Amino acid sequence: MDERKLDGNAAAGTLGEVFSFEVTTALYACEGCGRVAHIGEAMAYMTEIGTIVRCPGCDNALIRLAHNRGRHWIDLRGIRYLQVADVAE
Image (cartoon, rainbow, N blue to C red; front, side):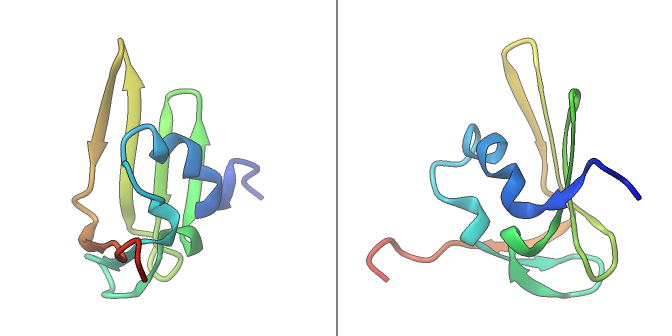
């Protein structure tokens, strides 16, 4: 059992450093399997060197995030799209 494996909500703080909206409630479409779900439903792997958010359907890396030397490095190639609901909804 991998103790670093958490649900996507665990990455909210780290992702909040990059995104100006509540990213865990945003919908994603996985580039690997086409699954559409909220980021909070994905799996997060968090270590001292970064965070990887993976699709629970196919284990595709949706988001790779690292913080080094005062910069954030983010890779979203695993996401077909990220949909954010309007605040008024």
